Image (cartoon, rainbow, N blue to C red; front, side):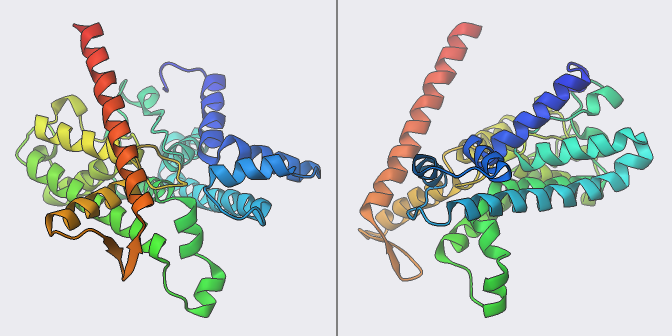
Length: 315
């Protein structure tokens, strides 16, 4: 990106990242709100469908909450990245901090480091920098966690009333944690003996980069090690992570972590001879299970068809 696009092109991409992360209707609602215009019923219904809400009331408050969460997360990322980028790149480091913070939170995965180091290097120059990598990891994780989960976890009223997490939030957190741990185990175990990737690093650096590489395929897109040098088993694990993707109402794609969780629980329950799926003593409706299976199968068929088409075109 840094070697291909002009400054104007980079700014256009930055705006597109942000609009894509928030959603077009969210941005439209914000513009209407700032202009003092009334949000129509049809627009509220579109927002409701976009965020999968059942109630039309409070749609504008929901949109403003989403925007507030986004700005706070990205501003925190900018400040942390600026600690490293400003001393390295001067005033340009401020722009780099903004670009990479937005790119990470919005699950875009575009970077500008090819202009400063070598083309297509992504974040490899910072492979030994915990500040940069952990900041990007936090932004990618929050962006992929979903606005519902984030707003509920950090809800001031919930904290004041000392209410526990909702079932949905627990499911999202558990699914993300399990996928991250499994991804870390797969990447670390496979690549630790690969001298072209993690094998050339010290123990701490290898663990940090393994963590980074396990998290970013699902939603982030950044890398600190050569993707071409990865072993086939690692690439297969990354394909699965990319297919699952992020959580609902997040900035990432994929079939969603909750869909994968429901399908996995359905398979596990079936293997035990159980007909129903329960989450903390609450039964998951057959309709929800059916939708999850349909989404997973449809995604698999589309990926398979696209892969076969690419193989035919490239052969």
